[in-house]
Length: 324
Ligand code: GAR
Image 1 (spheres, helix red, strand yellow):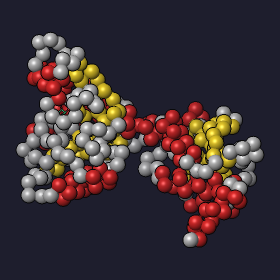
Image 2 (cartoon, protein in one colour):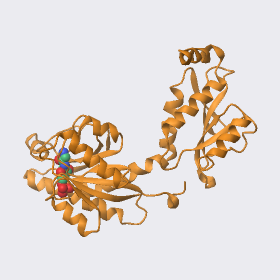
Image 3 (cartoon, rainbow, N blue to C red):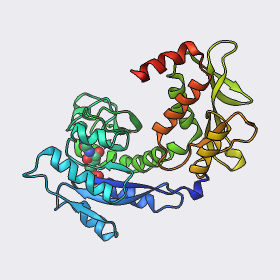
């Protein structure tokens, strides 16, 4: 999908304090070509300065004090507010609450946090004082995915900030903040763009195709493809990047034949097409670079297609398991 047609990702920012990172994210989002927009600023502290700043900029806000609520109730209400605002991602910007595993599971892979250290060094609090006390030559900041464990999800980006011999924690914190304001908008923009990038989509498809039994990857006419292992093993999937032709990135898989091919395309013509050059073999193309792609559907078709070419010896096991 060409960049100019792509809808911007909607982001809910969770804050507890001053909200300078939220402001950096907001102003960056107003630059041309930035692939995200702020849909909501939400806080556990109704008095947070960040909320005034957001309201002054015309952003929707939501505040809910956590006192008197269980963690699960509060998380759920914050998540519901983000959902209602149409958020695809939640971005924590000085949100000083630990999220429940239920919340993290509900938003899996769609919650980012910024932390004022070069993770994995110094998770938790007092990061600058600890870096100075340890005699480190640099501190910095990290943007990472949020998982169940505090400050330990995949690191998506980092910036180092030099520590000078006479540094105080306050002076270092102020410089790290400047670095945070540069890092966060860039990393967020890259992250929300991933589902449209051929290299990322290929890696996602590859891991799913290779998880099927006795599969090997082989290039075919310049496209990555997956086939049953061995000399006579047939192809069941191809990754097609028509990017340069101005069209889509797609996964090609096999239906049971011409009838099903036609029916599937008729049912879902925005997302499924008949791939050129793939003749009458019942192949369909599933568009991958689009908002809201359903990876379960991709997995379903990979498995179906694998089964269409798998030898009886392998597919029989599956049939037996299904009858069970
Ligand atoms: C930022 O320095 C951020 O890294 C830190 O809170 C500050 C929020 O400032 N976050 C954490 O310590 C999370 N463990 P801000 O409200 O001005 O953006």
